[in-house]
Image (cartoon, rainbow, N blue to C red; front, side):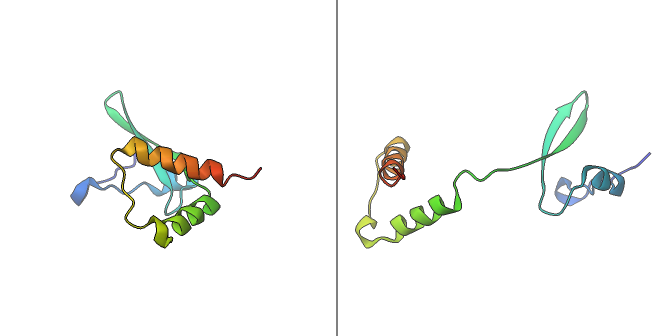
Length: 92
């Protein structure tokens, strides 16, 4: 039996055997699921929502002086604007 103690802020240390068996490394993300009165942790792969090139494009647009001070009434309006920018700059 392997035990782990709950520390401050409800932190636990993963047993070395689990880390080795699952090839867990620092910075990995684990999905936590409560099942049958216990907790199950599974490693997951997190994919970036935007490519590096898209992030650079957003950064350029944000820093462009003509875009300073632009505001939107709703989140949907802002997302629609970003979608239009993405489509207008898409390779053809």
